[in-house]
Length: 111
Length: 115
Image (cartoon, rainbow over the protein chains, first blue to last red):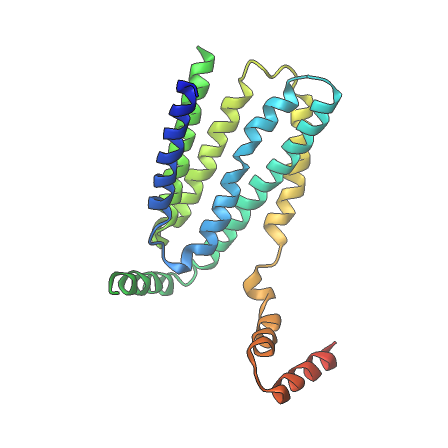
């Protein structure tokens, strides 16, 4: 096992901690938009498909890369738009939203 | 040198993504969190386009255009589940959870009638 692999394992473990700490104690009201935003962020796989589609490594690589670029781009565009729609949906009832979150926080704080 | 700058851009994008997830957890700043995530995505994509391994851009442009054209209606006009669901949500749990055959039969009859 090379030093690089060890460093990557360290990064993996730290990323796990960051993920748990980031997602922890989020009010249930925001679960759906957070899930949608996370799905949109997962479109970061676009960078790999960009490299593949532009590499000019033969027909198969170009076809697969272009397909991947299309899918990832649809994921990003649709994901961010739909998250925006969701968030604008409950911006209208902003007082209710903050009330809910306060309720969620207090009920989470008092076991 | 460009390679290192690209890696730093990726690092910055990762930082923005984590900050965005953190910001999305609070209702008052959720909107800003999403914009942070979108900005991070733009940084990562633009940095990737400067990569030395990319020699031709035409298929990238084609793929991106097709994806954007497919993704825009998906994001803009797909009905929200909150408005599309209630009909199914009204009868399904009662059908599944009800132990009374009579009520279940009534629900099924109503479903058959509405079809």
